[in-house]
Length: 247
Image 1 (cartoon, rainbow, N blue to C red):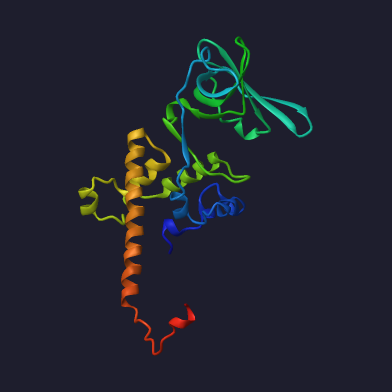
Image 2: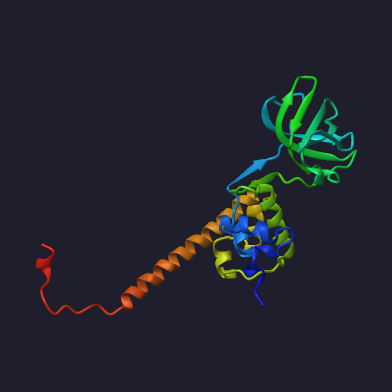
């Protein structure tokens, strides 16, 4: 029976065969490859008040939902879903496009972080198709992954979270305890989760240090193995002088 790291990516909840093809396009055929598919960057979701948020720029605001999501079909193939929210000072109209799956994503009176391009006027603020998270569960740093058409960074993050839900707290670590203690390195489970979903900048730095150490160690051991193997090979014995072929 294959370990979780060896399982095919389509076995994760919410992936399936069709989305697995997109993951394969990114070089991620297994759950283990997904856990080693590190974010290329991070977004700091630090909310700003609507009154001081710059218009026509991407920002994060913390707002309370005032109305349920309403549906408006404006033409064939185009349906708008709107809700109103407030940060206690100004109102914000949020619009999503062709996304009926959001109907149960918001609770009136609930607080959320919305991140997107802020438009409108000084009195009427709007945001179209923002990313969002419940305020109480929003991480300080959100991962941004390399994407491909049909597979967004947010989809990848959900798949990574599903993988961690299945991953035991205690996993086999390729670095022995003595080595981790000697170089003050965190365990593999901590490093993998902190590189994807860092609870703090310090935890992210610890994860990067641990994983970089491991990669360099594997590289050095591989080079050493090649060197020793080359030393053990029997040299060819030359029975004639062939230098004239080269000079």
